[in-house]
Every structure is written in C-alpha cells, then in structure tokens.
Length: 637
Image 1 (tube, one colour):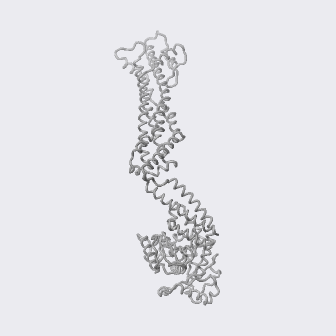
Image 2: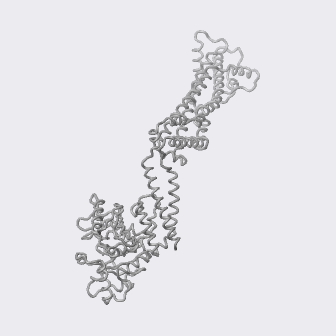
C-alpha cells in the first residue's frame, strides 16, 4: 500500500512540476489530474493547533507563528519519503532551489505571502506549494488552510470571516479531500468551526477525521476521554488526541523527537487517557496513511480514466493546433500552398453545397432577380400620356405615315434601360454571397490549420476579396453588355409576328401583365369602322396609343424573360465558376516568389495559439508520465 501512496505523491510531483495544482486546476479548461488525486485538507479555528499538527507530522519547525492570522494562504505541503540523504524543502515558485535550512523555509513562506497580498488584502486563495523531501516523513499531501474565525479583529477587513470560510470550503468540498478537522480540547467542541464545516460538506462523515489538540491544558477536573472513545461529539472515523509543543518548547528549541516522547508519556501517565490507542502523533500519522490508501484504491479507476481521456483530448487538440512552423523556405512554401489547396477545396465544397452557398445564389436568381424586374416602373413608360409625348418628340416636324417606328424604338429603349439596375444588382448580390463564403470557410473546423496563422488568414481573406472584385467587375461588364445589346438591336421579326397574329388569330404575344395584344385592343374603338369622326376620332387615337402600349409591353416582356434566363448564366460563367477555379491563383504565384522572412511572417502564429500549444504539450507530457507511473506501479501489484 505504501507503493500507492508513493504513486500519488509521484503523480502530484509531476502535477506540481508541470503546473497542474490546486490553484490552476480551477482556472483552466485543460484536463486536471490534480482534481482526482486524494489529499488531506487541514481545517480549524485560529490558534487551534493546525500548524503544530503539520509540523509534528513533518518533524520539523518551519511554519510561521504569531498572534492573529498566521496562515494567510493555503499551503499545499507534499511530503516525499526518500532513502537517506539530507532533508530539504522546495517551492513551486522557486523550482530547482533547495532549502536545507527550515528557518529559511519559514521566511520564504512569509515573503511569498507578502508578495501576493497587495492592495490591503488579508488572505489569498492562491496556494503556496511546498515539497519536503526527508527520510523521516510519510508519503502524504496535506493542505494547511488559514484558520477559521467568527469575528474580524481590529485592523482586519469585515469580509475576512467570509473570505476564509469560502476559501476553506472550496478545498474541502471535493469528494477526494480527506478533512482533518482540528479542534482544541480546551474549547467548547459543540461550537467547533472545523466540525461545523466538515458536517456541512461531508454530512455522512465519510471523509472526516477529528484531531483533538491541547489536551494537556484543559481545565482541572475536565478531560476528553468521552470524545476520544466516541461517546460525545461522534465522528464516523473517530478522533485522534495529540499534545502539541508548547510555546516554551519552541522558544527553548526542544527537539521534535523529545516533544513526541513527552506526548506519549502524558497519555501513558494521565489516568484519564491510559489505555487509549487513538492518541499520539504516531497514531495520527498511521490513521492518515490508512485513510489516504483507502481513498487512493477507491480513486484508481477514476485516475486511470482521467489520464486516458486527457491524453486523447490533448492529442486531438494538438493535432488541430498543428505542429510547430517549419523553418526552411521550401517547407514553408509547401505548407502555405497545401493550406491554400485545402481552402480552395473547402470553398468549392461549400459553394456547391446547400444553405449559405449554392442555395443562396439560386435564391438571388430565381426570387430576387424576378421580383426586382417585376417591380420596375414599366407602366410609367407605356402610359398613354408618355406614349403620346414620346411619339410626338420622335416624329418631330415630320409625322409618321403608318406606324410610329421611331417612337416604338424610343419607348422600348427606355424600358430596356430600367433592366440595367436589377441586372447589376444581381451581380452584386452574388458577389456578396461569395465574399461571405470566404469567412464562413475559414471559420470551418477543416480550416483550423489556416486560422492558427492570423497573418496568413488575413492575407487569404484579402487576396480572395481582390480576386472576387476582379471577377465581379468582369461579370458586371458582361451583364451590362447583354442589356445594352438588347437596346442596340431590336428584333423586327417580333413585330412581323404581331401582324401575322392579327390576321391569322394564331397565338399572339403577351404584354408584361400577361394579356394577349388583341385582348387589349378589342374592347376599344380601334376596332370601329372607318366612318368614325369627331369624338369618335379622339377615341380612335386613344385606341391607337393603347395598341402601341401593348406592343411595347409585349416586346419588353419577351426581353425580360430572356434576360431572366441569360443573366444567371453570365454570372455563373464569369463570377461563380471563376471564383471556384482561380480564387487564390495570384496569391499562390506571389507565395512562390517570396523570401524566407516574408514566408515566416505569414506563418507567424498568434501568441494565444502558441501559449495554448505549449499548455497542451505540457499537459500531455504530464498525463503520459502519469500513465507510465501508474502502469508501472499497478503492474507490480
């Protein structure tokens, strides 16, 4: 079983060395091994003898003493039993520096406490980590907490009581914390702060061991045998009675061994305590070791699971973060080009895909373009007043003879100009979708290898946008040309078909509103005989204008349907397909000619990513070393 305690100590040493400790475990999302390792937390009221109990376990005098709050930060004390050699202490914040003088250890605890308590703070939850290597200590990890108090004394902040209470509770509430509740026998044990807190966080008493101090200075005629024998203030795992060193012993520098001998003589010679086995520092140490062993055996499966899961998670995250950047130019060019290919492939997949990609572009073509064309103010163009005005202006001083051809042309050209805006807007809409896709692709998990390099990510976004602007301008030019072409040459055959339809009553062209041309003219006096005069002549003129309006509307309807079919084709050909084919072509050409320094800047990672990789690497190293340690120990059992 000593092997198991040694194993946990080794695991805690590895944790301490690689930054996984009681303070950092609560402030990081990295898998914490420290959280699942059993430890012993010492709690008690101020001046209850907590620090003296710890010193007795260690066998050395090394903790700060004095009036008021002596322990102002949690002290994580790890005891490592070594074979022979000179005993020494080592702090986490001064790794590699060995303290052989235990008076200097006390001074460093005071100094480190003062360094961290700034701005008038009285206590801090950030622990001091101290490891003591000695042939005479058991393999244990104990946490000494600041003493609990009921009221703030002069010079202390009013929050001191709550601050210490919350700090201690945070350390003892974990299921892996063995609570060492230190209570002085010369005080009212019914109001013991340590017992109160232990019962709050461990109501079943599964993790609590009581330590009764100051038995030698109880009032005459009183004793604590009932407590030690479990008849009063009962605890499931009982009480251990101890006698700590008196202040006079400390002042006279009485050795720890002599104080332990005096302690045993007190229990052996004091009638009230004769025959008790649960007294003395040796009994306490044995009890702690036994409870720790039980906790370790219980936790072994969870420790193994935490190690295995943590290794898997860290390996997966490190793979996502990618390896350290290459140094030689050829390798850097290869890495950048590979990432560009990955981006191109991901962009193409998303563009061909559904929502946000191809689906959004299709919506522009089939919904927005159709709606924008339908909402154009064509009616203003073929209103009777406008038609009459345009025809007269087109005729000038020479009226038309049969049909107002120049008027027709001007009216149709005016309608075609209206089609320019929705056609260009369609190009812009698709361009914006393609631009948004660049950001969406870079945010995808498959492009995490790119986004770890902030400058390269920015360059890819910038070059992609430049390429999209270039092909957008080409697509816009094509669309504008297509609309201009319709205005440049009007299809005469269309009007010949109108005449043939009028005589043959065959299928007739329809206006923008969907009506046949004959439907529009039959209800008006344009169909009346040649004898109409006077008022009838005015009605005939109006019917003639209506007929022109229906012809213009029908022609524009044909062109609109034509452009609704051809503009999407032009945009896909000039913009969408070009974006798929050559989004990063120019950037790739430039990368091949860049010098090593420029490439290195492109592959410069953000400080956050470098720090995260370093954290994950260290944590993976911790977990792998823990795996080797636990496999080695359990394999020999």
